[in-house]
Each structure stands twice: as C-alpha cells, then as structure tokens.
Picture 1 (spheres, rainbow, N blue to C red):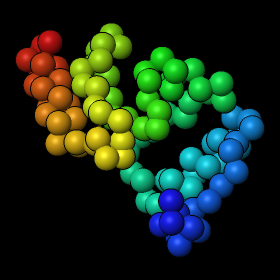
Picture 2: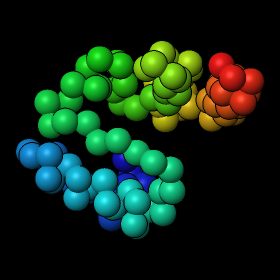
Picture 3: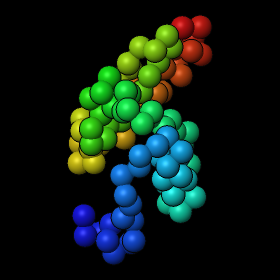
Amino acid sequence: MESNRQENLLFKQPRSFDERKELAKVLVERLKYRMPLAIDAIDNRADKAFAAWPERIYVIGPGGRIAYKGDMGPFGFHPEEAEKALLALVGEAGAGG
C-alpha cells in the first residue's frame, strides 16, 4: 500500500521464525502495539487453521473455544464486537464460568 511506502514499512517476506520475530518487534516497538500477540510458525499453521489471511480478529475462550471470529481485515475489523465477546468472557469467569 502507498501508506506503507510513505511510512517506510516495507519488508521482505521472512524465511525463518527468527526473521518473523524481528518483524513482530517492529509492530511492538515502532508502532507501539500494546496487546499481547502470538507469532505464527514459519509454515503458517495458525493462519491455515483459522483462515486468518490477510488478518482477522479472534477471541479465544476457555478450553480453546472460539468466542468471536471477526471478518477479514483490515476493513472487516469491528473491535467493538470483539470487545463485547471479551466482556462476556470476563463476566462468565467472574460468575464462576
């Protein structure tokens, strides 16, 4: 995207997990991403399992149950829906669920 060029956010496709971890540092350090994140293995097994390409918001509940599956991003992102799912989980946990 042109905005990536303007902000100098152009990177080669990583060929190892260590290279992928280095790119994740850009997200955390340079772009100030403050939520916990997981890094997919270099074979993209999580991407394939969750059909997450190009990106998607998921909320995973207790026992690995999918509590919320958003539409494909970035334009299908609806963080307010993910927030509702998270609040429902917190409510369940607080009620002993």
